[in-house]
Length: 484
Ligand SMILES: Cc1ncc(COP(=O)(O)O)c(C=O)c1O
Image (cartoon, rainbow, N blue to C red; front, side, top):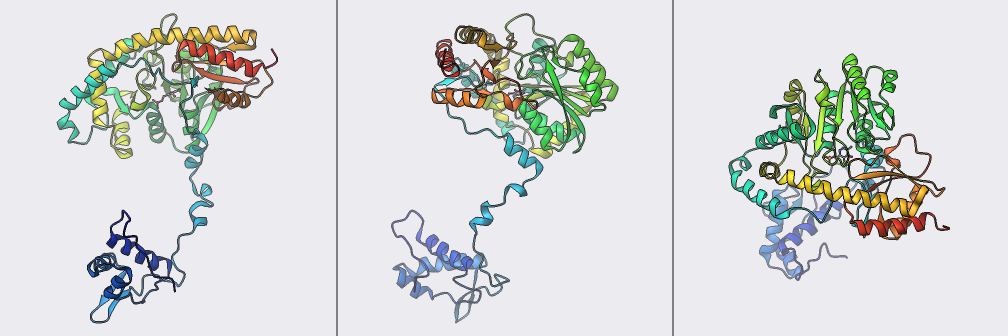
């Protein structure tokens, strides 16, 4: 017969643990059945060439966990009522993998559709929503982290305030006041783990499944996925070169929530016109709808004056302003913020407490320190020049290599350009060909509910140098228009 268990004297796992593991799996798989007698410690030790104490330690552990019991004078037995039926409790690969997806919630299924494939760092990075890897002020950041650590001992020893770290809330209030004409006090600022967390919590807090909400089409895929995952009744509002076509909201009627990117429409790059801003606020007050103003990259505006925030125009406390440090500083920080109407603050803070208790203290303290020292403003000023140069390079290279074959969307701000190609080759195929040439880019179709008529791409210019932009675009043009 096969031995009950084997041990590997040279293995990394301690021997008593190997004996315990072997007997435990014999019990769980049914080789040792309820009521069976275990070998005497002396004889098992002899068989395995181990000390008796080693085997006795394993038996003690099995006894302590309730697998076996000892009967005075007669030995150690598998507990008789361990398994109620006679089918051995064996793990089944089928149970483990098969049929898992249908057991997911609607939310889980929608999240699975949303998830991106793994990202490798490509030779030429034209993916959207990236930041430059070569111009980060690591020394200043590192100094801020150290100062923060020195000053935050007491705060690290407590749970964080769920609304956010006080000095960071003050710094954010000052920043959005200066840069974005957002009128708020630090009390209205809540810190979140990325503005995406803020959005998901707002959905949780302000909607029941089935409630009517609106997003832009094309629009930010994470917002659409979050709304759909909640089982909301979503209206997809068309977008043109003045941004969201607000007049289409009227047809949708009483909405609970509208998600909009007024400064720099994601992905088209359009700016919501003043008349539409006023119409949107009008609509929102008429049906008491909340408006989430997602202002994800407005720190980077290269032409003209930055447009004032929608929040700054709102006299009725209906606009919730969402900002992030993912573009202006570091995506890996996962820090964003919301500016809430004052009456919503305690409700949001309660929701945040229940959800995860708040954001890590050290990162918040470091960021507050970095902002206080002027490092953040310096970084934005510098990156605005860097990114403007890169944007110009991308526009120039596209014109040089594609001529009239590429249509480029609005370009006054942000880190990406929406580019439409005049070709019959499908967008996914063009992305695949580019990947083979070491160029990573994104087909814009996940942004669209109504698909675009021609292949459309959201090209990022932030994480690639002007020289590399020129090489990548030249190569891509050769792949997209091989006959030319
Ligand atoms: C419209 C929009 N909002 C927000 C974000 C950033 O979200 P987070 O703060 O969660 O990184 C992005 C970037 O991907 C975006 O495109």
